[in-house]
Every structure is written in structure tokens, then in C-alpha cells.
Length: 44
Image (cartoon, rainbow, N blue to C red; front, top):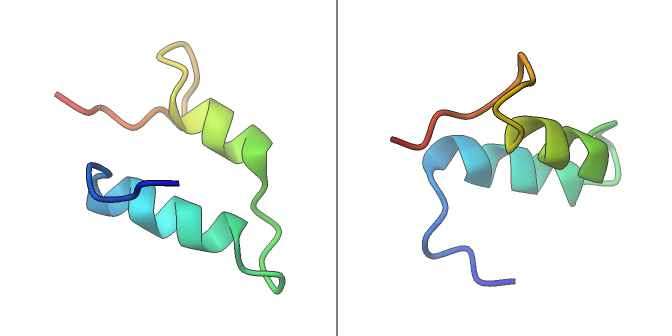
């Protein structure tokens, strides 16, 4: 996956998801990109 266009917040979450010692998963990624979710990353 190309991470060059990710914000720092996205990069942090992406590294958490790809870290086997971390509980983050793609559900967290989906939450971060869902404007109706409290965990939403505002990219504006």
C-alpha cells in the first residue's frame, strides 16, 4: 500500500494495524475513515 499520501494520524494507525503486538485492525481503519464515527480522522 502506498503510504505517501497518508496523514501522520493515518500513518500511526496503519503502523498499529501492522504491528502484531497491537490490537488495532482494519475495523479501526474503517472507523477512522467513517465521518459518522467518533474515531474519524478529519482530513480537511
